[in-house]
Image 1 (cartoon, protein in one colour):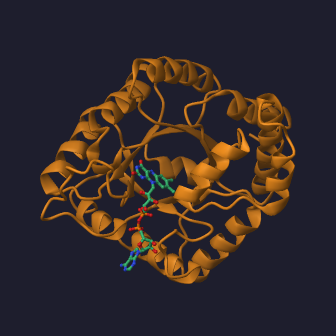
Image 2 (cartoon, rainbow, N blue to C red):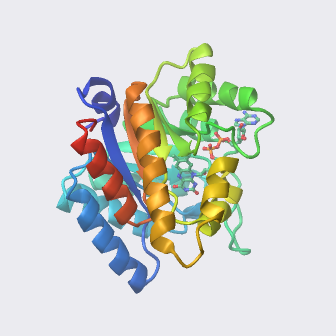
Length: 292
Ligand SMILES: Cc1cc2nc3c(=O)[nH]c(=O)nc-3n(C[C@H](O)[C@H](O)[C@H](O)COP(=O)(O)OP(=O)(O)OC[C@H]3O[C@@H](n4cnc5c(N)ncnc54)[C@H](O)[C@@H]3O)c2cc1C
């Protein structure tokens, strides 16, 4: 199914879970359990990440195929095209097509850590270039990434929203955003996009905090800030009390979701980090309140 049809027509807001392919046997065990636990909640869709420079190409394809064919789930496969040329794009997207994946979220990606990686001579600079290349060649329902606080490299949030509009003009039919811990960023972002004539569904991303240290390290790489009141409360929890930090993250995530759903978002993507405990607790609470 073209996922945008579900975003547009579903009576209740949609929800989905992001998974990333495992790189070690232990991570695979963890992923298997997470997939079991979270797919039991009957999400409307699931997403699969794609490693920089195609590093997880095979793992991403296998995971997407498994979720689609064994679990019968609607899959949005991410495709990060940084440094990849037409043959590699065709190989990755062809692999998804073969397994019946109909939805691709196109991102630029970032330079791979592998020092031996060399960008293909015909690789593209921005996600909009990738969309322009992919749109006429494939029938996928395409999406793009959005950044409520502005992308880390963006000249300004306004310029970033201008480029978001370009991604929509070149084929993105829906947007999934980076996570944030203050909903005002998301609401302002949607306003900026709408002011530029972006009418496609914009789904917020929500990532429950597990602990301050982890939240800070991820935030530094993806440009999602931790509001001072949140930082202060987390900092007051002893580092070894993992349950208290996770409970705080669940409360915050639930509050965020309730406010987002009350504002009429078409759905929510949960960034799971391949962990199920906090995300399933939030979804169960929202369901108990009749919100999902
Ligand atoms: C929902 C979601 C899923 C993601 N999945 C993955 C994944 O699976 N794998 C992965 O590696 N990464 C993933 N990312 C991260 C993403 O690849 C990085 O954030 C990357 O740095 C930017 O990707 P983009 O598609 O937003 O880039 P772009 O839209 O190309 O934007 C990159 C930067 O360039 C600026 N820009 C855009 N167009 C122009 C232009 N024409 N001229 C000048 N400046 C311009 C933008 O303002 C921005 O600062 C994901 C992010 C999100 C939010």
